Image 1 (tube, rainbow, N blue to C red):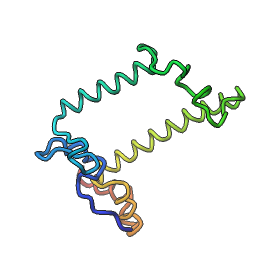
Image 2: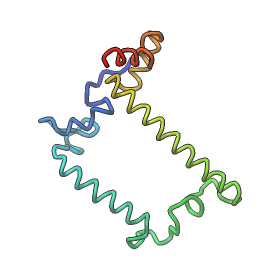
Image 3: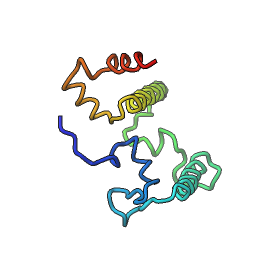
Length: 148
């Protein structure tokens, strides 16, 4: 199981800390694209960009695309015509919510795994495949239980 060596900047749970280094954070490895060195500038850009998107979504701002009547599934955002049957459409909405909740739970597991092992999910998978008996949740739980 080979993982490409990109260093600490490529590990997803350490990438944000690169902003606080002297070199800053270069998106896509190029300082010409976006060279982030200030957390205040990043926060300001996020507030402006996300605020604009939320204002458009909630209707607080005038719609830049008046031909787009809705921002939810159906109408122009339904190229596969999945919302043609109201009963199927209601069922698909519930499935989307359930899948979203499952995805959030999976991310919570990835966050916990990263905090315990200090490695990313691919590296943990490679470790587990190499040594299934030694690299698993029970081994880490036993390690922390003896420290308490």
